[in-house]
Image (cartoon, rainbow, N blue to C red; front, side, top):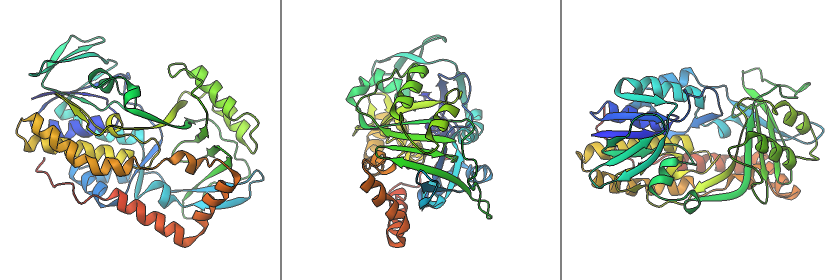
Length: 390
């Protein structure tokens, strides 16, 4: 069975690893010219994630490339610490840079898949017996199945399911990440046990987090409308600067430090509203189908989705309709849980009172233990079968 996967970040290579080792003819097409290095840190938590990493044969590689745990110190404009968000809450059981994880997944999948970089799908025609895909540079080709693993702004979803606006719900908050020399002079950056320290500063509707593993600088803010062009980085930088106009603490210096960063990225906090991730011979996996930006479960859920989709395709012995129906059914519970929250008001509370309340939850041992217990429960799903995969 010939399978085309769009996207070579996390979900795509994970699916390619399973399918390529179990007899499928796999092609992965990626719009970028190469694997993207660095990026934000992502994490895994709980038994379900650990078991899948182990079954994929990448658990040791992930641990060998993990980042140091990072505490977030939430401070006021005079650097006084108001609360500390422990690294265990932010980084799960193991945390790794997205680029390092993508590289590991590529290494473990490339023997069983053809990777095509610097190209993209322009059109899809599902005839019922196959899908005809037209590309930007390579010749058109027919595939038995097409899988969209190309992120929250998925081209495959747009081509096969419909316009993005039908399936994406903006949450009213935006985020930006960038590198650059962070203005943290005079602040402690590392604990004696090796744990790193990042510093977060809140004003109503705005967060600036500097020096973290998730990103050297992370900005989360509320805005009434997206006053920027998603294809124009200059307009995105201007949108960020406008959103933080008049902000105190070290924020103006941080905005300036990231102004020329090559890895600057800005987007809306969004979640998908899809209840089915398949249509005809096309399926979605990862953020293309079940996104909740910065919600904390996205990367683990992408690996779960790739595992379930591959497992059902192999169990169905070529009956893609049966496999897709089972995939939709099995992914309903974990995707509903992962998309249930809105991290925007948590990271950037709308009022001074809400900021103080949020900080108190981390200062109160009972509240913190309760939140840790909930994240363990949400991340573990005993309903995921033990598929017979190589």
